[in-house]
Image (cartoon, rainbow, N blue to C red; front, top):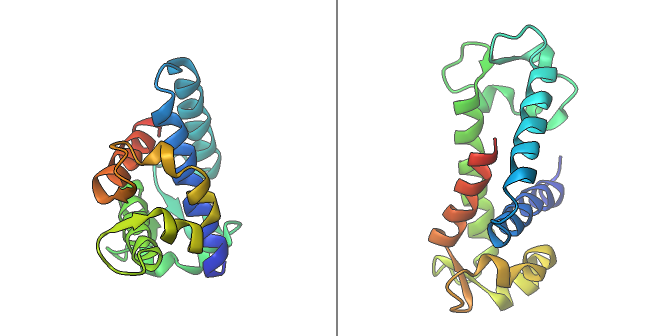
Length: 149
């Protein structure tokens, strides 16, 4: 998976999460999404041991390619915690790439220039309406996303 595809997937996750934050009144769909995610994870975890072997994730090229990088304890399996840690590390590096002036926050201009999808949903993510998306706002989106899983 190249950088642009990874960025698009990452930003789609942020945008989806931001939409969730903006519509907290929809509790029932949230549980349906959580159930769907659990069902997908169970489908991937074919032996039901709560972790993913190389064979189980072979069809997911991005995971398979980065298996050794994600498997930080080198036990031959990917756990939910290892995958979350890798996602957080990846998210941080992608946010730094968007943050042109490295001030720790993303302006609308930076979003417009580098990530049209993020720019499209900028106002939903910018909870305090200060014209910037900061780490706290991104963390709020991440926590809402994590609760769904």
